[in-house]
Length: 386
Image 1: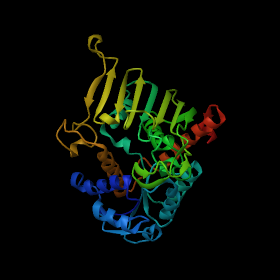
Image 2 (image 1 turned 180 degrees about the horizontal axis):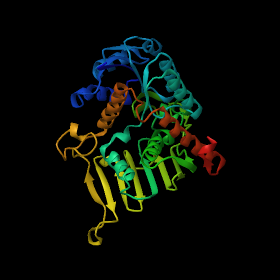
Image 3 (image 1 turned 60 degrees about the vertical axis):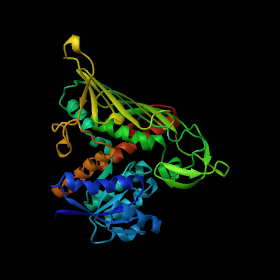
Image 4 (image 1 turned 120 degrees about the vertical axis):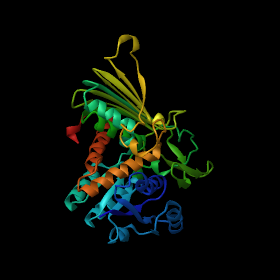
């Protein structure tokens, strides 16, 4: 097996990101399984046909149920809205297909667990799309933590700040409807922070949170594409049923303390996905808006030169960078998806489970729901309750 035959369901924001990754992978990582972009699926026949031509798929289809039954498909890629994830993933698993599903894995923890069980019962490989793990600078932070160079970890603080829906006239897109998205900034942005915390620091023990929806109603959307939409301020309005901002605190099982903030109401922040880790021997700071850099501080430095240093994670010693450009020539958002697909491809080729898997998606969903439970009941919630 030297090819990976793919059927993809969804074709907008994440569909573009995944398609670009499949097309780029063999050019820069030629030893990986070569993605064969067999078919792309969407409900609108003309729109999905246009997407197939633009993104480089062999054909377009409108029935995902037929797609997952095809003998010429090895992997089902799910980047449709969140409310479609469970049904498609379980059906794909029963059809014996490997699954790559965007985050959050499901609308509820119960659904996420069902998806994991179905994949494990079928013996297929499964991966959830936490792409920020695959930034070389984040991987460097992971190495510094795991090697002990930061010492005992005391704090993990993370924030994901955006401002794209601050206009009260911005339409009611599907990401603002709980029945489709599951949650707002909490599940969309906070899920990434939670996964990074699990990846870098470890499992959480208990959480307590708060949230707010600042704009309660918005114009009904007449057209939606990615994170943009059209609607009439004079037309009918619908209720916003998700959070605009969620903050929570956590205690990790290893004793570290954590704080998390996810909001779409931080004026001036287009996509500030950042974290800071403080340990007994040093600290690191990462901000995805400067994704090629990691700020590093070591207490062992001589006193007269102590301070945060900027490490540009673009040298061949940094994960993935040997495949790209000369040192100092930076990479971007799209490269995290290429590295993600590389892990998926290698895992399938080697007969192992890709990471992050549906199990990681379930762990993330458990924290998301524990925070929701904490907000509703105004108390600390243990992850053992979930």
